Amino acid sequence: MKNLLKHKLAAGQTTYGLIITLGSTELTELACTLGLDWLWIDLEHSGMGLETAQMLMHTMQFSDLTPVVRIQWNDAALVKRVLDIGAHAVVFPMVSSADEAQTAVQATKYPPQGIRGVGGHRAQRLGLDGEQYRATANDETMVIVQCETAEAVENIEQIVAVPGVDVLFLGPYDLSMSMGIGGQFQHPDFLAAVDKVLAACAAAGVPAGILALDAADVAHRVQQGFRFIVLGVDATIYAQAMQTFVNQALGRK
Image (cartoon, rainbow, N blue to C red):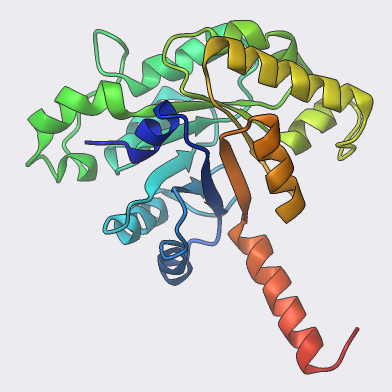
């Protein structure tokens, strides 16, 4: 396997993607035409299951987009299954310590680097490419850990120092909630937390990611140094587009 996202980040590129929650192959196919770098299939905050995630990754297979899957929790059993159905990168929510980051890394790697079990499913072309896949998987699969708690900010230097952590993703909503300032993204404490995370990532050579709130925020986050940027969520984009269309069609302000 070859993980295009991992190689782009290693080359210093800034990458962009969308979070996919609706489970629609048609909308996912449209997203594949937008010139993005990756799509994040979200199993944490959606009604999708593994079968739908596999179907969406099948839709992506003829594009250059990297399939990224966020699992529900830092659980090796979940990791094994999403990798076997074709994920190239796994997003781990609520990673608040170096030990939790190490657990995430070990779950994505075959022995002796980790504890991932061997299975011949879709990622290995149903077993036909098993030997080739296993020879490259430990190097090519990505671990994306989410900094979403005040505890994670306190431990950020230790988290990004864990070998095998490929991206540190700052979750603004959960982090601000954990800090007792939910949604106050200009609060001095939140801004200080962002600065601390960025500094730790820069020192460790780990790309930082974040969800951008709008077009101006995208430019701001790039200027700050974030290189794994979520441009939006499919459901929100679709809802806003429908609302705008209907309001315009009916002359509503």
